[in-house]
Amino acid sequence: MKVAIVLFDGITALDAIGPYEVLCRLPDTSVVFAASVPGLKRTDQGLGLCADVALDDIASPEVVLVPGGRVDEAMHDDVLRDWLRTADRTSSWTTSVCTGSLLLAGAGLLDGRRATTHWLELDELARLGAVAVRERVVVDGRYVTCAGVSAGLDMALALAGRLRGDVIAQAVQLILEYDPAPPYAAGSPDTAPQQVVDLVRSLVPPKD
Image (tube, rainbow, N blue to C red; front, side, top):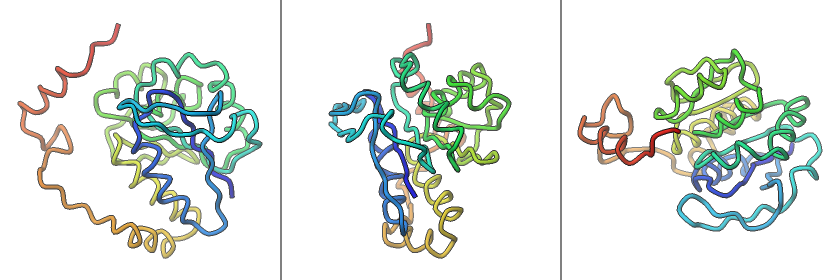
């Protein structure tokens, strides 16, 4: 089974690396990082990740995974958009992390489908044609989307269970010792103090 993780300048590192750490441990699975133009890509915080192959050189991956981050430029990448549409025709699963769902929606792949994204971008996801819901992981047919950044691990484990069974998925979870116990209850706008929610909103530039 081949998994294609899309890279582009501006992605959030954990959106790609979290699912990679899960999926690369599945039996009989290869994971490749790919981009419109292969080579070094910089994350939204400047970390360098390497796309080993061009998107057009990947024929029919069983799993397509699109990370999020700063997606404004990627939304206008015709090569990426066309590849997503082509790959989706034969993929078993088309998935995204965080604002990666905006790229799927922008390619027309989430029209009328339940999907999610980072809580700050739910209105934008709806504007792009999806039925936007605020849930951690959303499965609609063979499309799997998830909320912001850290939710990529949950999405990848849920996908691993569907691909290789619950026992294998749980084994991977144990290998990674993924047993979250955050020091603060501030991981959701529902639980974070209002002043923290307001601070985060103030740090996000308004849409044009």
